[in-house]
Image 1 (cartoon, rainbow, N blue to C red):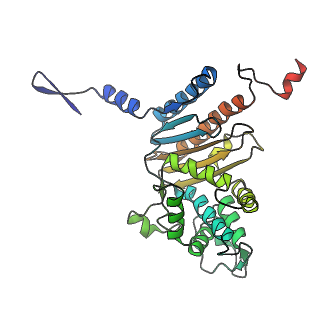
Image 2 (tube, rainbow, N blue to C red; image 1 turned 90 degrees about the vertical axis):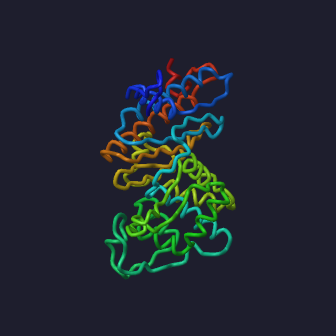
Image 3 (cartoon, helix red, strand yellow; image 1 turned 90 degrees about the horizontal axis):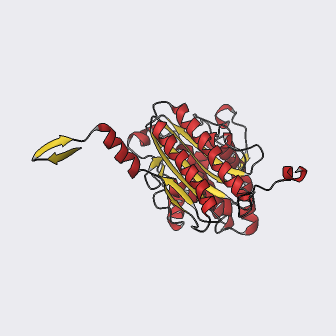
Length: 317
C-alpha cells in the first residue's frame, strides 16, 4: 500500500500495515452496558481471540454468542471458510426434518453398498453384509465423521434439499456443494463453505431442534451431542459437559462448530481457520479458545450479579 506525500508516493511501513489489518479484523463486542463486570470478562475473551489470531500462522475466524444475554465476540465472522466435516450437522438436521415431515423413516434399514468411500469413519473397513438404519448412519457421521455414512445420507435427503433448508433458516452462505472425498468437485472449486456466524447459528438451531416436534427434537439432540472423536473443541471442555461439537479438517484447514450447555448460560461458537502452515496449530488454537470461552461462561453462570462465584465448594467457607 502506498501513500502520497509532497507529490511523491511513499510506502507505509510494514508494521503500520499490520496494525491497520489487525484493527480492521478486531472482534466486535456487544453486551449489557449495565453489567460492567461481565463486560470485562468478555473483553478478556476478546483479547484472547486477538492474541490467538496474532500468533497463528494462518487465518482465524471466530464467532461466540451468549444465547441468553446476546453478548457477542467475533473476528472475521462473515468471511467464508471451508467447513470440511463441520457441514455434517446440516445433513443431520435435514434428515430429522424430513423424518418429522413423514418423508422418510429413521428406523428403516439400508445396506451400505460396496465399494465405500475412504478418508474417515468405520464403514470403509466393514464387510458387505451390513444393514443399518438411517439414524445409525447419522450417529456414525457425528461420532466418527464417517464419510460413507455422510454420502449415503446426502443422497437420501438430497443436496439441494439441504441447501434449501439452510436458506429457510436464513443461512444463505452455508452451502453443501459436494459429497465427502469428491476431489474432482473440490478441484472445480465446489467446496463446502460457511461463515463463523452462520456455523455457530447452525449449531444453536440443531441444539434447539428448530421446527421439529418435541420428541424428534430430543432425539436429534441425543444424536448431535454424541461426542465426536478427535474434537479439539471438546479438549477445551471439562469432562461430562453436554455439547454439540463437530470438527472439520482439510489440508491447511481446521474448524469446529459448537453449542455448549452451560446451565443458565448456554452459548454457540464457531472457530474456523485456513491457510494454516501447520494444521496442529489450528487444532491447538481451537482447543485453547474453547477453554477460554468455557471459563468465561462457566464463571458467569455460577456468579452473583456482583461477581462472587457461588458453588458447592463454598459451603466449607
